[in-house]
Length: 153
Image (cartoon, rainbow, N blue to C red; front, top):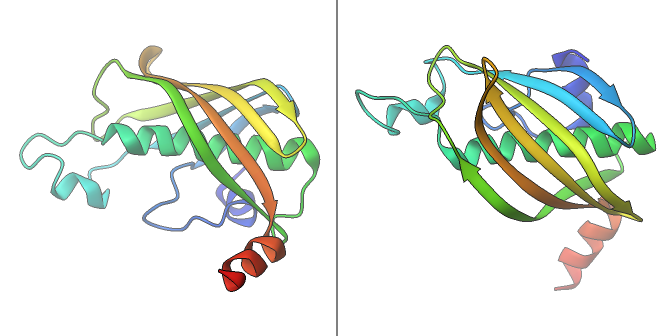
């Protein structure tokens, strides 16, 4: 899946789109994707000057975006009518820094899926070395229902 297809699925845009390509997807089971990390990423200006490191929370966000792609493709959802929200992250661990020039591989495996709720395990690696991991809980909602709920409050 190329960037055009990813842009059709996810609402995220630069500088917050953190998945560049999906290389494998088995609907309802797993997904493998990657993010090319370049020195041009805006977060490197402040994290950290002179020693750029990708923020760990953005690695988790990349894994969450990959989870959303897996959910959309598994259920053949219409992304113009659905949104995926991150509900929680458990057991997040950061093992090694991610640096400019790294290719961040994102691996998502479904732990459980019931109704609109997805629980996944995410693993991020660089050159085969584990850099971050966690379990993700996400829900898929109707955009119209979400807008109506916001208007009512």
